[in-house]
Length: 273
Image 1: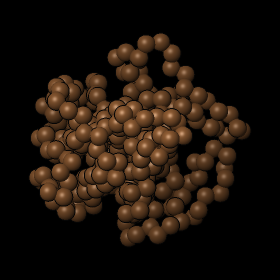
Image 2: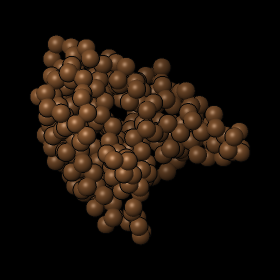
Image 3: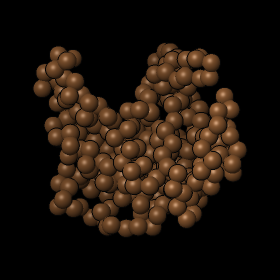
Image 4: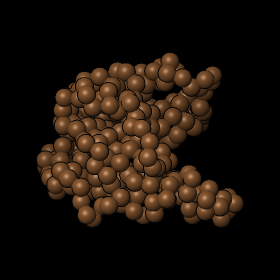
């Protein structure tokens, strides 16, 4: 680990409901390649599967209708998960070993985490988790919601920078929960839309699905319905650059001005407000 002078900035990643952290690899590897320490979370009983020590595996265990009550309960658990991870990173940074099996960890991880520069990124319910966690824990300095509807307390006031980056498949109403969040958000804020995209476009399926389509027997029309009409490489390029620009600005104080106004280099990105 090349620790840098003051520890590396940290970004937590939370996936959507019934999803796994691996489906955010396209974005997390981009951040990691630019010097961020990225910590991806699988939420037990909410993720597809989570492996524990001793080969114990827990799978998705949510039953019944997925309504606001259930989502609120999942959001509270996810927020607690996030705060637990922050506690473990604090211990790790101090030279302790929080590994459940006490496996040796690289000694260079001590002081490698810049704990005063932590952000959070999430897709779908993971985005709502970022909004709820940043309100609950001041150790989080900036957050990004990728196409995730919000639910109280995530819609209530926060004073730290937050980016809303959503899908834009065509004409339609704005997400009312984003309007509520926008009204109550006191810190830096920006809302962007990825033109001709869908909810799935903000996961690795954006690039994996077109490649797997012949094997899965999917038609071009079915692929388009799943991930939208925007070419995958353009969707990924925009997500990577805008998310990194956001964390560079608010965790590193490096401004490439990408978030100030629409850019002719990214016609696929629409500035909402």
